[in-house]
Length: 301
Image 1: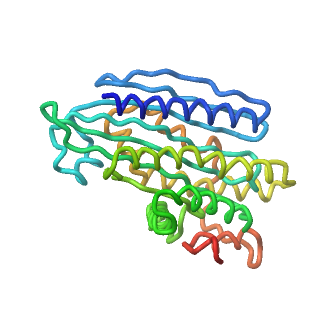
Image 2: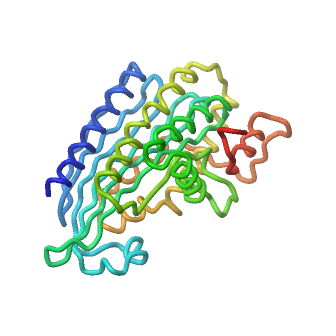
């Protein structure tokens, strides 16, 4: 089990490093921590920063859970795992900034393995990061995707980037709204060909998150804004809630596998505004967002 201990060490270290960086970027609030145990096996530590100078809420959790019965959201895709002992570990984060000009962001890196009668049945890595702006800036979106493209270079370069960018665009898509959740990034799952290479790619994605996001924090955290922008931010946060509760596989897996509800739902924004039939003013910055919620090649556009 030496391999899995290395994965666990990396994940707990990643959580520590991101928390330290976000506390520094916020400059005011600190993460609080809940350590929890799961009845069937395993547990985790959930960290949440609230009411900061930059972040209204920032949540990042590490979990390492075990079981013998996969939830329906997972078993329907992998019937060969029925009855196997499984173990899933990962780090997942969602940050909701105060300033409407600073995007919400999500990242996740994870590892799964299953055994039956002491023999491996399957293993894989998954993860990615994506960006959800309310008032997008082209330079921010290009920077985000350039970091994603650069970290893919040792693992297939443009071919890897194109495939996992497309996967991200397709996964974070609200079918009932006919729009993406944001401007995308990278998403991958079921990566289980070469352990060392696949683990290295997962680490590159995890490590690349801060390179992609922190420059945006510095650029946008003090951008002047008023109630109009705040209201639009709260309205668009509703789309985030819709995706997480209707489509997100991680949310479904966590809830169906008996996970800790508080840790699973920490991804939801602390405040949100619902408005029936909202239509932005023609030609407004709010209307312009719709053009960004369609997949495109951000690096050559």
